[in-house]
Length: 552
Figure 1: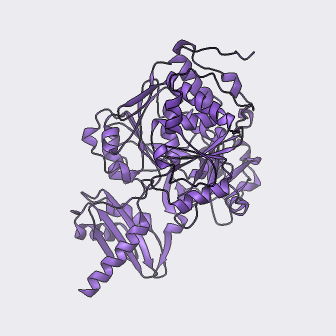
Figure 2 (figure 1 turned 90 degrees about the horizontal axis):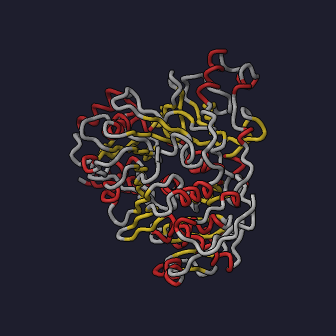
Figure 3 (figure 1 turned 90 degrees about the vertical axis):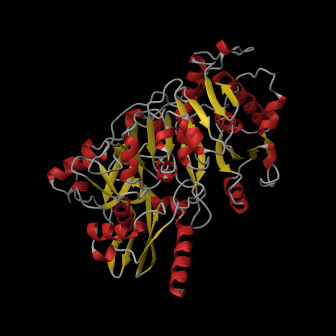
């Protein structure tokens, strides 16, 4: 097919160069565990367990609706150019306007020398210019690196610029003085005002985008030091966002909230699920609640969702949570109102790689099954398959597995290894999550390997204690910490939780050595900037409370 030369554009002649971004996508080599039956790799399992290892561990084989994010976005622009694409406060843009602005910014970036494979730092805040910047970078076949410049420490921003080799920083004019000055920066909203009245021609990458080309680099939270950059590809993303259930049933006009930190991988789920399916992206300002009240699809962490009054969310149709364990009581409340997904997956396996459509008042909340074209294995310390029903470490395989860590081959080689079950063309990732298969083939999550601690010589799973606490009346959230080899401390929220009832719940559900030495109630558990429980702050608070009680 010949590429069209584009003249001036009207909404009816919106840019649509799907062939520009066409590339070979290896669906012929999608993951398949079927050949493993009878394989020596499964010799440690009974024949029945081998059958279930294959059946449970493999997600459905599904071809995404498009091969690339831009293909899906351009299709929406062509079909519904006048539909609202993004809203933020009193501002809104149509798909036609969004695409035009992205073309203009991409043209500017190209004139500055940005091309395929280059890295562009996106140091900004939630806004319409943020969305325009993301699309502009992708149109050039470049890679964006998002950070919320308001809250990211300067040391972290400097580190990201240094390790990534980014060529330019896209930001907003009010943040120009906050971003590193070692490379050029561009205030996106100021540039867009200058070209507001102009019609932009389509901007194309000089390179035919390949499915394995990186899309963005997400830096982990860095709670234990400087963050590591995870390289996520177009193939990784479309495999979740353009298949069920990861598409969250978003269709034309569906209102999708964008409430999460842009440096958090789940923010990409919000943004692209909406824009690639013709949704209306609602970008929050200060109030999360006001945004969620207007949304039909909500993606959040359990800690964030627990703070949202469900009775005010009359429009909600689909809610998905991930990032930390979800209390069953929280899932029950929301699942009675709308479709509710409990999901799991670290950044390295592209947002989430397992999802459970939770049925209210079920006996057990799980993290579900592998999403399409993905695999999950429960392995022991020697990487041998665990018997079905035994707890082991979860390893993730298939098309979700990202391209490793930026400029960190040692860590990449430690966490990403050849997948012996799928063969040499695939990698599997060590999640460091503990889990086991239920009898019906769903994954029961038992926290992180580093959350399985030894107290007074006994092995204890911290999340199991928190789950017992969350089972009592009025307890919305709980978290348990190990202070030293003798001391467990739990926090429950809100302040009104009955602490005697909390202690009794742990004694009833778990062995005596799991009972925390202290249980404190507080109004709200502190959260990190990514919407997860801030265990560092709670550790400091626990020590202060214990010292204070000892003084008394």
